Image 1 (cartoon, rainbow, N blue to C red):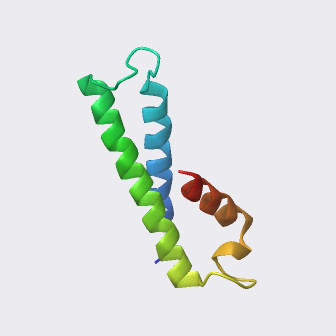
Image 2 (cartoon, rainbow, N blue to C red; image 1 turned 90 degrees about the vertical axis):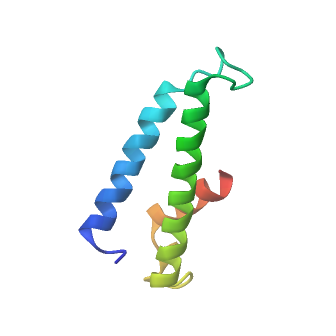
Image 3 (cartoon, rainbow, N blue to C red; image 1 turned 45 degrees about the horizontal axis):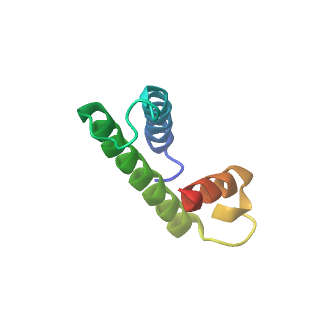
Length: 87
């Protein structure tokens, strides 16, 4: 499943969605996030974070965590791990 082209395509679409929502976010205009737009963007942000956290867990289960051909054996996955943990 984690090597499936569809899995990678969905992940790329969520990355693009994240880029769009980050571009729409205006922190200086609405500091307390009381507007409908800000709340919708917060909901998207939560969905995106949950998606990436689940993607990380699925890959860890499928590939293993440590070793040469495991999740943390790939440099891009290490970057993803750091980003998800920092989020």
